[in-house]
Image 1 (cartoon, rainbow, N blue to C red):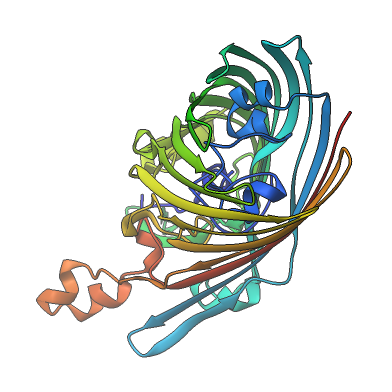
Image 2: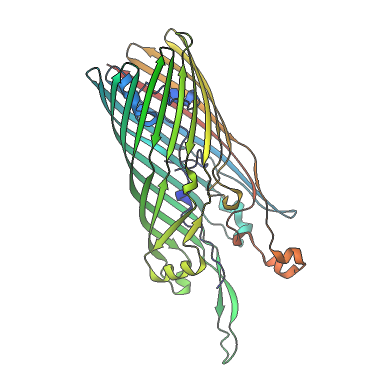
Amino acid sequence: MGKIKLWVGVACFLLAVDAPALANGFYLNGLGSRASAMGGAFVGLADDFSSPFWNPAGLARIGKKTVGFYGASLIPTGTYKLDWFGRIVADAKTPAQRYFAGLASYGQPLGRRFAVGFGVYTPSALGTRWNGEDLKLITQGTSYEWMSRVRMTTFSPAFAWRPSDRIQVGIALNINRAVFDFKTYAGAIRLEIPSGSPGAAASPAEVILGQYAESLDGWGYGATVGMLFRPLDQLSVGLTLKTPSTVRFSGTAHVSNFEAMDLPADSDVTRRMTWPLWLAGGIAFTPTDRLTLTADVHFTNWKKLQSVESEYGVLAWKSLLAETGEDTRPLRWDNTIQVRFGAEYRIKSISLRGGYAWDPSPAPDETMDILTPSHDFDAYSLGLGYSLGGLQVDVSLEYLKSRRRVIPIILPRACLSGNVKACFAHSTENLENRPGYYAMRIWIPNISVSYRF
């Protein structure tokens, strides 16, 4: 039996609310307009309503009851092109789309030393969609739906303690709810078809499986711990550790042409997926009353994600996919280190902000695919803030531009040995990746409104 390509579970790999790209793997680059405008270099500052996400120790710095809201619209554009030895077999561009991310939180001091808070936010909000007409030549001439969308929402009660005027520590419990939908071409399988004549050998035939669709949801749990240390009045140092969170997904899967093979077209499916450990350190330096400079280094333990395994409830699905190896999707991701810089300049009630971040991809060429388009990003940001009494309004615009990524075509040995027939029988569907040219850019306009009272 030949190899089947279902590309199941790919949506899990997207970092994970809505947008076509992987910014820091599953994770978004940051939440809160002020932090976003400063390149996401906010771990060493964390002194506004977004602190439950960045560094829960920052709750001890807010000073007053604070409520805040943040909303962002992710507007991605992806391109994919495959040149098969001089023949263009795919030239695709993602259609216009928007994905939304957000954060809402409340913080309250309890005396001079303690503070509590609660945040609801989307640490993951990614996905992708392609026009099936642009990919017909690699799907046997038929147009299929290609999309993935994953959304994680975190409910985060937090507590902070100020043991001294120079040190703050905090902890937040992360209760994560993740959902996603996923559709793709299910690929083909080679079967031995009886000839109908007594004693005659069966002949191999390729059976098109049609459309694959999947819808899952699940819960996971973790924690965020943070520390802020101010050795000098002008200098603040922060450290944040977000523990891994394993989400136990369950839902249903569908393959449109399984019924023609006398197999159930639908099956229950379960899967475990881990959002890995995230460790970040940052500094904030205020050389003057008007100017603040920040810098962060973020480490994400993506190397823990080497593969994702799926468990199907229908016995026929389970046996078929176990035999072909398609119940396991390889990732082979590697750890990443992000570097971020930010600046804020205040003129009375107006704040001007800017930032830059370098966001490398955790995914190797060997597992790159159009539904997991992980890129190396240069991220630029600008923002503006206005304060009036206890009211604070911030706006920001982020621009993430990927560096060009070309996944080479790896030919089988038959092509090198001169076996032309075997060489032309080779298909990109036999690979764990999808060769071709990839590019991505993402615009993220966002706004925050907060009030201290």
